[in-house]
Length: 162
Image 1: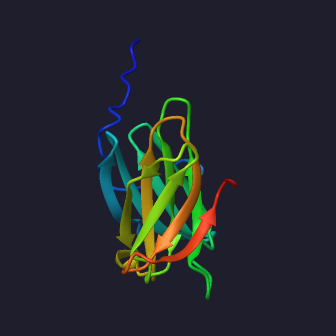
Image 2 (image 1 turned 60 degrees about the horizontal axis):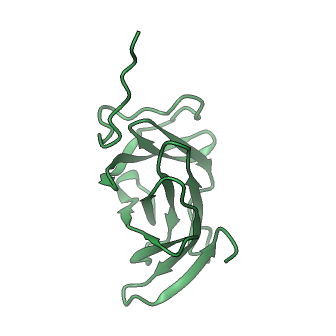
């Protein structure tokens, strides 16, 4: 029997649902954004569960989720940040920042950067912004820098020491 591989460029569609093994939602699952980066389709959703607020980055071939205290704590710029990769899929980076962050710059270990999509969390009734970036297979994220409207650096979060 031949199993068809999902098209990696396809943007996940349909009614969002919690992925297998993730906490069950206690309210609506809200799509915050979707797009295609480096030929990979993605969708980003947020929902509340008994484990806290959950985020879910969906790709055609799978995805990941995280729950808990993901929003930036008072006085902090960054909330939760996640980065992942597989042998066949792209490297992903996603996270939460405060509402005053205009953009996020993602630096890769090899010196390159990642195009990042910023999304308001208002549709989910939350304060702040989420971001998603897709990098080439096999790359590693070194740091994430939050920038203000004027392009000035607000804060940098180091994932790997330079």
